[in-house]
Length: 201
Length: 256
Image 1 (cartoon, rainbow over the protein chains, first blue to last red):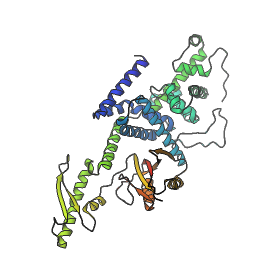
Image 2 (tube, rainbow over the protein chains, first blue to last red):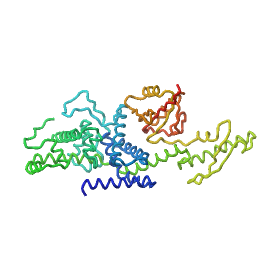
Image 3 (cartoon, rainbow over the protein chains, first blue to last red):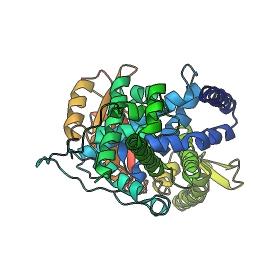
Image 4 (cartoon, one colour):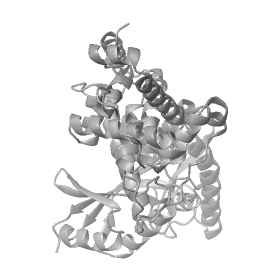
């Protein structure tokens, strides 16, 4: 099945589930959660960089969707709507973490060319360590890639992470981040290039 | 962070990146057939993506936990708006509490020599779904109605992930300034809905209870919404320190 066909099928299924939900069949909402909870989590994780916050945001996304779905008219795709909610909530949480001086956001103000900036704050990272799963399933290079990923400046890290969220296209990423398509492509390319170079050492 | 520049004829990082994403123009595909350095670089980029995808993998049980949270939040929301009685958990607790309260009121009345039925209307009804009979009392008891007594003994509930309160104030613009002074800079959003100012801020449940108490202590602020947290009702909210997204709607009453 080509990507276009599978997207159409998914979109058609979403519309049916929403109609059923509006008709009072609550199981239909559960199916939407099963289908998209991972993606909401991933988008949030891409912005926030820690699992606890990402999961909380994912929960809030679906709580909000549950409240608003009865009024959803389907003028846009469900996924487009859901991605935007996830992005907004993730950004809010990100700003909130930052405003409270929290060190939960994974963010390092290091310039991409690697020069040492004495003013750059290296915030303590909640998740620089590999999870047990990662330790088992990734090889040495991939593990080092994750460590270096955490060291990338935020804009590059976020762009690369979002590119690896299931089914998220360049167009959707540029829409969500509010940047031009060319900017996103170039950011992702630079993120990859920089990681590749750092791994060659 | 310097490595040798790419040899001429080898694609730049933009092209390699596009290749990872599956967009491989013919000349690049041909180049890759013979260029070992590029093959190696492309392989590295693919492994980087693989690692990123592993890092992004959603945790076990995510979907179940989200479904559960949505159910909880939906039941709190419906009980708060449609009446405290609808949530099954609360019904049972309320049944116990109100029965006790009704007994207390009755006892007081009996002791004061008033016959039951003069001042009190007591209806016994079984709430649907619980099978537990409750006493619903309406009274002109000057010491406060039985319902108020019962409300004070409510079982503490933890707050949902999002709370929305409508506050009526005398001068919304002035109150907006006051609120902005109270909240940390950059921590909140201000928008409008139906012509009213709406503040959205993320706080812990403890901070939210404090904020509500402080606002309500000012007689110029009237909380119009029944949802928790309510002001000056310690014990009605189980404070866990979790984050709540608070929407505060400022309605200008026009009274100056």
